[in-house]
Length: 374
Image 1 (cartoon, helix red, strand yellow):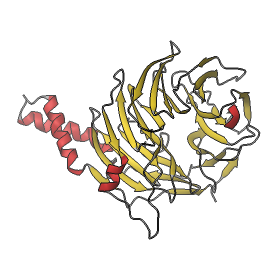
Image 2 (cartoon, rainbow, N blue to C red):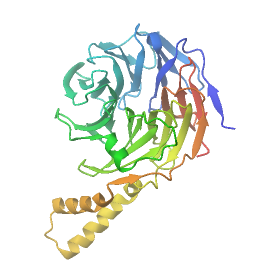
Image 3 (cartoon, rainbow, N blue to C red):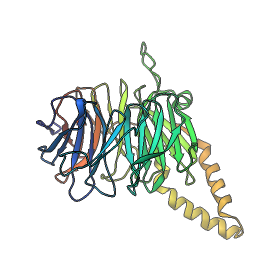
Image 4 (cartoon, rainbow, N blue to C red):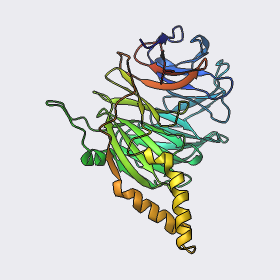
């Protein structure tokens, strides 16, 4: 039986979101309805609580550069707090969102915040100036998720209920590219059982691997859509696999297991699943891509030393484009947890030295599952 632990005493309303800091003084934060915000220790004991607003706390995230600095969204506002002591907000960024905020992401250098909201916009906040410096407008419906790419502090990906995944590169306000999840389904439609209603792939959550080149998007069709980009950020490969019998609400890559291609998903079917994507057709070549490039360049230089690096890149992309779309039909979860409640948020974390997944739902108590057997 899978070990689980319920954390109580932190909230009296349903918990909507969670985040974990990455410093030596590791903290866990959760946000709930009616403005409740709580910071926990690894034993599941509340360290500090704050009623930050009358609006729901829709997203929490810690700064990668200052691990105790906590950001919490409520309504159209982002509160900046000291995670060690939630007496009050250090400052508030008013009107950070044009409409209700759904997701926050801080870049690796800790100087820029991306805010996704119900208007469909992604707003960029300069955290030193504490103000919005630009607005990225391409989504035609709610923008549900946004994430900066690791190692690329000026590059971010967003996803929304318009079924679009969009890659941006700051300071430009026009996207590098946008991709409709319906295109993947048309190429690789997963088998559906008789009588099953088709749900459009409304994009709920996007995650990026630690290498920054593979995206996973959880969608309302119950599928996880995979996208892989090339070294110059062009869309290179795509695929899809069925993850949940109802809408998939969460997808998060896990960076602390045996390799960076472990993925945790959660859905409206009450399941939390762990997937090993290292051998998947869309991402498998990522593990050996650098070796392939070095070998290719060595052979190529031996044949013709005058070939430019730009031409090499084009040839490599042409090779990859031969299988630009793949169905991941044989993928199955390595671990499937019956949470029994609709999943609001998933937060992978190392708690007390053990790999774990923290799950929030419509209850007021987060649940922690140990995944150390993976």
